Image (tube, rainbow, N blue to C red; front, side, top):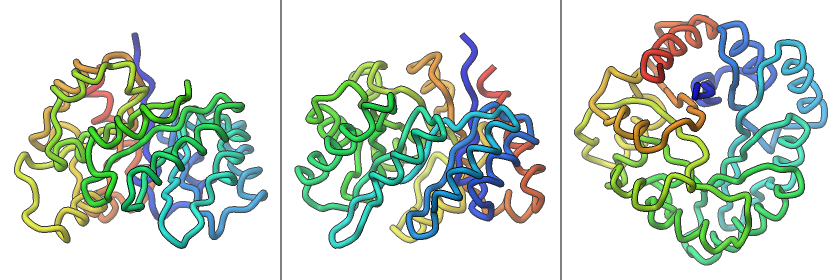
Length: 257
């Protein structure tokens, strides 16, 4: 089975959501991710992104992020509504809430919002957040009691959180509707600041580092792959976002074929 390849919204933090869709399509990607900024997103944004998707034929794999945090609006209802109009398969959920039960409750609420639209809510764990491990994500997902749940494994976060491909296999591949892929050195950063910078700016093209990418793809076959190569080097070397997307597609095909 041929995997659907998607370019993550994080590759192009310099682009608007509509330009992200057009850029990805021009570079030859069949799918892309869309970043939803609740402070700037409007109905006009939704309409323009939908128009670009229709004009180019590219599909929106996912819309992100929903991040509940104490004292702030996570914009979940608006994001899910936009994702439904855009035809996205997935929305991304993670959490800054320290109370895991509060995270689980909010995740269940978001799943209920998304279910009528046929959208799966993937729970992403990040070692820099309280929702920090694949085990915590599995607990959150198990408590939702919905059919539109899943765990999103970003292979960098899996490695840096102390998780393993054995953990993925143990939980069962049906938990993982798609994967996020990038590369990095085998050895993790030594402090929190460096860990954050690596995730946002220091990722490598798949195959350039030491993460066990092929082993993860063997463990979770056939699902879509979102290439989350957030890289300062790529942004500075390939200033033209279409060129940046094209070089990433070349590397993405090399590891997925």
